[in-house]
Structures are given as structure tokens and as C-alpha cells.
Image (tube, rainbow, N blue to C red; front, top):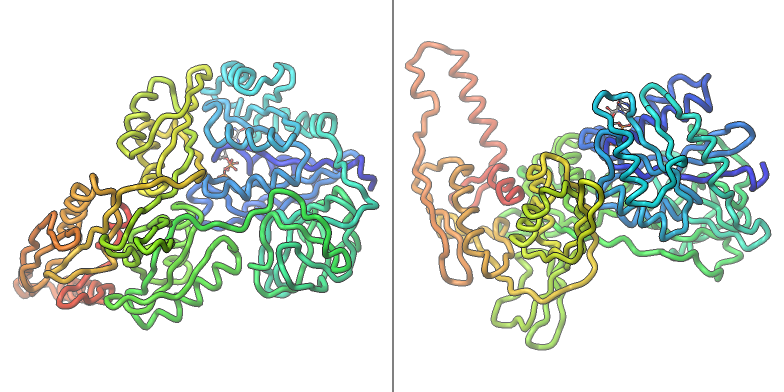
Length: 589
Ligand code: GTP
């Protein structure tokens, strides 16, 4: 099909504003005979789905009235900003979908920004107009105000009932320009996303920008290894083999490569013969931002943990890991994540899908530490923080956060930002809402910032952030001592002025969650040699069935087996036994 009959677009929408439902409607319209598509479209990971985020979906190719419409999905969470920008870079246009009951949200706004920076044509869509609480007129005004859309350009639809959905496809054809790449030029294709297929190896989802891809030796500009592709194809939406992918087309290349790390999002794919070609702009190496150490509760599970992480990172190239060892916890893995939500999703998958029982250390950002010797070190765990006496300066990552919230909550949100060492940068009022731009240390964002913002605003505020610079910070390492023994895995890095408060908070939380031992247990937090907080956990009564006075055998058995199970989840620290709850207390602080 001619290049002028191709349209590449994506959907920009806040979580739950109806992206998936709308995609299903498009498929119903373009492939009315294919009934079980819905199931397949929803085939994302259950944990991601539960949390309302789709991390990865394949692009979908639809044929409609003589046109090829490629719908390229964008990941739906703040941790994946870069991936979103690469998906958008593969398109000429995007639908900006807004829920008629909720209006514009921060994520919509920041993705709108990314799309306009890339010069995309936008089609405004107001969804869920079937709901009684819908306020399409108000939201339309907001869209006109915030983004400067003309009133008659806005599509008012219900993705649920299908009302007016066809109008969107017509708009896509009429207003989004066809791809402009040159079919004669040296082949260059943008890698949008990737996954691993059991039989075909690492699969690259690409948008061909120039030239054409055929079955010949290929290479990624940022990579080294040349490969002979196993097959080329398109997602229709099932994988369908084609012999050629031409300029403007979206499809896949089954590379046969074993390691998904060779496939870096945003990289340029070209033929081995044209290896020196100028890569497409915008490529960045994946940058982990949040670090944690994971240890199996049962030391025997270490191999299982290694395998599980290796398996997950086969599908998730942003996940970085190396081995680590702690005297108290034994062998584990140190993992770098894109953000805290990415970390939570991975932890949950490790527990649910691989049945692992894990201890995770407090999440840490990456500090740049200048030593008195002049050397600069990157420190990502409390254990690795050098002694105060040899540190000249510590710098922490600083994020620019865009928060979108109802206007009347602005002062509360700003209070929260200041409490977390953030500062106000700018604000812009949009109808009844305000867009706040703030500067907030990443270390503050990764500890419940998002959750707190949500609860403060009853779910109405939204957040988007990216790390923009590093700033000097006065931090100390707070060590936790159980029974006077330091437990490295519970220690954390904090700003000096907050260290005492945080130490006290953690110690009292630990007192709640640490199971009673058969001796009196002092729980302390210390900076260097001086103790800043202390609690004492009383000894426990050993016989869990003591209060049962003979009698009920099944109840007694149940209690004993519960106790045995509890034991299994424990980790021994000197004389002290710790379970997962103690570590979760650090994590959730
Ligand atoms: P994520 O993939 O999690 O980002 O969400 P999404 O944007 O894909 O939203 P999804 O399509 O899953 O829709 C979220 C919820 O809104 C679902 O319960 C849908 O059934 C519902 N929904 C979507 N569109 C409409 C609509 O037009 N009307 C009504 N009443 N409900 C809708």
C-alpha cells in the first residue's frame, strides 16, 4: 500500500480514561469478524492491570477504508517517560483522550507536551460521555483553554457504547499527515519497544523511518552484534509475516538475538551494509533511578531469585541487576529500577509469579559522593555510603515534578512539597485546576510521594516527574541496631535535619512489626556512634497454645502450624529473628 495511505498514531490518556476500551472499539470497527480480539488486547500482565498501568503492548495494525492505521501504544506510568517519548516519536499524530468526568490530568498534560515537542498532530477526544456524571462541555472548555483546540475539532465519544468512535478514525485519516520518510534512503527504523519470544528470540517493534527492511543482515546503531533476522512482520494484531517493511510502516523484526539488552528502546535499526548511517535522534541508554537489594528469606531460594530476575529482565530491558552479599542476609541481588512503581511491580511479580519470599532493603537513589581525596563515587545503597570523615560533598538527584490538582488544594499540595524539601517553580491555572511545576529531590518522591498526593486530593491530583539535575545535600547514614548489633539491611540514608525524626519513626514501626523474641530486645537507631532513638520489645510467651487449656485439637494444630510457617519466613540476625514485615516497614515508610 502506498505511503500516503498510512497513518501512525498513538493514544495519550491518563490511567483509566479509556485507552484500552477505545482500542477495543477500533478493533471491532476494523475487524468485525474477529471476536476474541478483546481478550488478546487485554493480555497484559495481571499485576500491571490491577494497578491500572499498561507497561507494554504491541502496536496494532488496522485496515480501514483503504488505509493502514497503526496504533502504537505508550506505557501508562510516570516511571516510563522516556519510553513514552520514543513511542510518540514513531507517530505523526496522537489522540488526546480525556475522561468527561475528570478532565485533564498531569500525565495527559506532560504527554501532550512531549507530543507537541515532536510536532505531532493531535486529535482531542472526550470519552465516557455516556456517564451521568459526565461534564463534556466543561471538559471541552478545559481542552480549548489548556491546549488551544478548536471546539469543532473535539470528538465526544463513549468508548463503552461505541458512540461516535468511528468519527475518530475518520479524523485520523483526514487530519494526521502520512509518514514523510524517503523510501529510497538508507534504511533506518526506530526501535519502539521489544519483547522476547520463546522461539524467535528478542523481537524488535519498529517504525521504519527511511528506506525498507527486508530479510538481510541488520545491526542496531548503539549495539555491536549483527544479526540475520528470523522474520519480519506486522501486528494485525496477531503476528503476521511480511517480506518487507517500507518507509512509514510499523511492524516487527524477529532478531534471533538472545539478550533483550541488545535491543535498546529509541535505538536505530539499519542494515549491516549501512552500519555508519546517522542514527535517529533522541536515543538514551536506560537509566535506573531507584535501587534496592533483594534477599531471599530462605537462603536456599537464592538460585530461584537469580533465575526469576534473569527471566523478568528478559522481558524488561530497563531492569538492571548485579549480585550482592551482606553478612547478615547472605547472597542477594542489587536491582536498579526506573522508579518506585516499577520496583513495586517487579517485587510483586517475584513474589506472586515465582513464589519467592523476599526481604527488600530501603529504596535508595543514586548519590554522587565526592571524597576528600577528590575521587567521585556513585553510592546507591546505605551500606556503600563512605564514612562521614572522608566525604567532602554529597549530591542528590533533583526531579522536576509536574503536579496537576484542583485549585483549592494548591496550598496543601505546596505544603507537602515543601515538607519534602521541594520548592515551587511555577503555576498555571486551567479552569478549576492548577498545574504546578515544582523541584523535588528524587529521594523524597520515591518514598510515598505519589500515594500521599493521591490521598491528600482523594485521587484527583496527578504527578509526572523526571530527574533534571543534581544538588548538594547534607545526608547521614542512619544505622539500625537490634540487640546492640547493627543490621545493615535496615539502615538508610537521610537528610541530617530529618534523620532523628525518621530514625524514631522507623524504630517505633519496627517495635510494632518485629515478632517478640524470647528475650527483651532493644531496637535502636544511631548516627555514627550516637543513638538517636530507642524502643524496647518485651520478651514473648513461648507457648502459643498455652491459652488453649487442652481441648480443641484442630485449633491447637492450626496454631502450631501457623507458628511453624511464621518461623520459615524469618531471618536470623545474631540472636534476633526478623520477618518480612520488618523489612516492609522500611520499604513503606
Ligand atoms: P490503563 O490501561 O489502565 O491506563 O487504563 P485505560 O486508559 O486503558 O482505561 P480502560 O479502557 O481500561 O478503562 C477504564 C475503565 O473505564 C474501565 O472500567 C472501562 O470499562 C471504563 N470505560 C472506558 N470507556 C468508557 C466509556 O466510554 N464509558 C463508560 N461508562 N466507561 C468507560
